Image (cartoon, protein in one colour):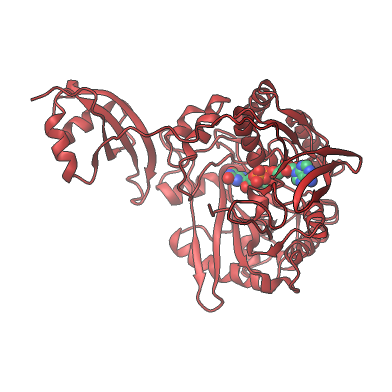
Length: 514
Ligand SMILES: Cc1cc2nc3c(=O)[nH]c(=O)nc-3n(C[C@H](O)[C@H](O)[C@H](O)COP(=O)(O)OP(=O)(O)OC[C@H]3O[C@@H](n4cnc5c(N)ncnc54)[C@H](O)[C@@H]3O)c2cc1C
């Protein structure tokens, strides 16, 4: 039989108990394919996840690639075996072809969408100017820390705005439901800039806020080396076109930059920029998003619910995902952006509005685990039919949260049982470093959101016994789940009647679509 050392196989669903180390994986492979352990060569883990369906018997699941000394018969087995496959070499994707035109591209926004656009364009040899209204990450962290300690809100340098975009103070979760060949090169880019290598194999990769800052500094250096002109403290305040083609942008109402292409990567919170686009007759549409609260439990409680044990050195801090579709109202109610062992963060970007979100450090070792609990909202809920009605709807409820929090940017908070009408004066325990203030969260949300959450919580309790608990605290409001408006693009990705303008990322309003 021919010796084929180069044939690589992939075996899925290789299970390890909590007592077994990863060194046992080649043994498990050998057992499955019925060969000697010594014949399992070049093995490597390509995927890892947790199977916690049976509490008290949690398994770590792996996909392992390997080659074998005797590959021929296994190739035949692989044709009939659901778990075993021959690995076909992937063609390189996202190779950039060099451009020869002398076009100037202005990329607006240094969130993930803007940073990656600038990187790929610069690698292709394009002249790129990358503009950001906020500050470099070092200054931005200082501004946010000062705000959280009671200092003034800087409306251009905060949790939403500045180098790295909205995710800089985040869990750095990199989960996506979109199957896209660019996923691997993007993860690899993060690793090249200092993210942990394991994100390449994890089913649910995450970087952690503390490590993201280091990644961002390396990203910046690489962009500078590629010749990208980086401009902080530079807000696009106007945009001009000639014969339907973009011609220039204005920075800080002062300086005009001529350009041939504009990548609009402004995120979902730049309300003044959305207003500018409306004024300049971009085609905008109100779109659904979700609104609700953030829920916090002690980390050990969630671990116990999910794993049956409070802690184990071989288990990551437990996550959860809950969803319920209310047949009567047709609204989805679901958990979102879970941050195991993380912190609730005050995420305002506008005066007199309070917004919450969540972040975690790489180790996810905080005392509390938090997640958004949100209810779907639709354009019909916004009160009028104009494109920016969803923005005003968000602003209204964020202002109610500001009032409920005592008009000092403290986050309004309430014990979960009190919110459910099952008591009063319950404990409020929160990881939110900027401080919380006892409040009635029903005053900070529309009735249908309050009712949606109140009807879903007992059902979530059935799925996760102990979730509805006096130990749980709710904070509000979670309103920046996704963009409330879409910048309509044509089939080439350009804004309608604005040739050369490409709305991208979260702020374009197409997130989750290709
Ligand atoms: C606290 C927090 C935690 C999060 N956690 C996660 C997570 O764990 N995983 C996850 O996938 N997502 C998370 N998100 C959501 C995620 O951050 C966003 O989906 C993502 O950042 C969107 O990327 P973007 O590049 O489209 O926009 P953004 O990241 O919002 O970046 C837009 C940038 O454009 C700049 N800008 C806006 N207008 C202008 C203008 N006129 N001129 C110049 N610059 C401008 C802004 O300052 C901003 O830096 C979190 C968000 C927050 C706030």
